[in-house]
Length: 68
Image 1 (cartoon, rainbow, N blue to C red):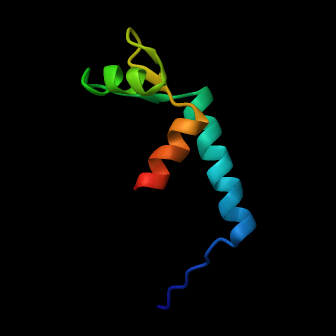
Image 2: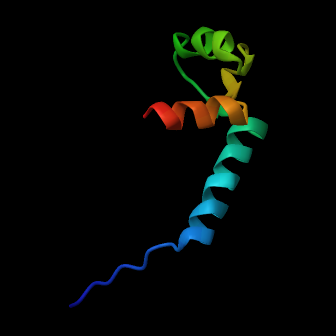
Image 3: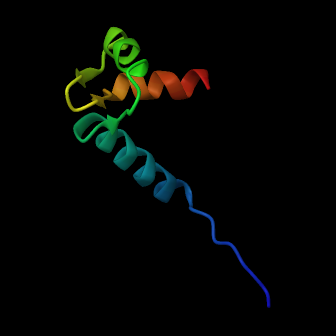
């Protein structure tokens, strides 16, 4: 059996990137531990401590990628 892979072109990668940043900012990420939320809040994320959700603004997400 042969397997193949199809890679995204530049426009498709940009679409995935934009959608990911929007999801992080609008829907957010749920954290099950309490350690990350205060750090994210200090960095500029909107944090709902009761729900354990951090909504990460575009600038924060892009900044993290730039330093990765």
